[in-house]
Amino acid sequence: MNRNGCFKLIALSCLLLAVVFQFAGCVSTTPQGRASEKPQILQSLSPTDRDLVLKGQIREGMTRDAVFLAWGKADQVTTGSENGRPVETWSYTTPRPVYYAGLLSPLPGYYAYPYGYRRARYVYPYPGCGMTPDYVRTTLAVVRFRSGSVVAWETVGR
Image 1 (cartoon, helix red, strand yellow):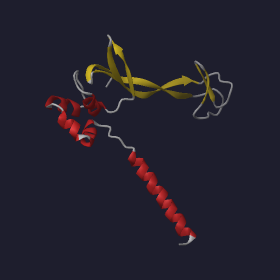
Image 2 (cartoon, helix red, strand yellow):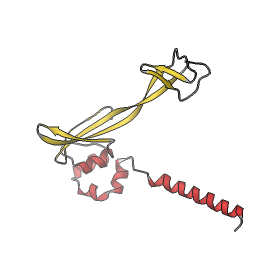
Image 3 (spheres, one colour):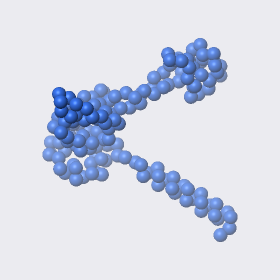
Image 4 (cartoon, helix red, strand yellow):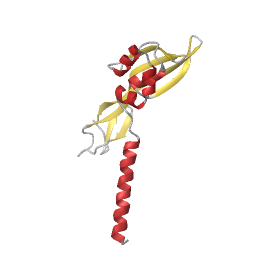
């Protein structure tokens, strides 16, 4: 095989690997997708819970597996105690942009915000103009489990 053929083979292999890795980490983002990936969990639920899960809803008394099918993997899981009994809390979050005005910044490419100066993601033509977002994790929903069952949950705009 000549040099050009080897280069094409290596380039094609790299492209193929990139495509495989792109799809290897895919996770279903809908209750129906998660249920089709784990049908044994869906079948183990009562008909009422099955309907709720497929609609993306939960109720008190549901298991962790049912909540996973309905809402997906939690962004943060914490454990603690409530009234002397262990509890597990699942939090679902999303990044939200927070914009700060870049006024009065003496350095080009930086902007002022309440806690000092930050490097701008975009460089503006002169110092201190424009706005750049910082991203803050915002809680969308919280679920509390005791002994593997939902004891409380709350949502914000879900």
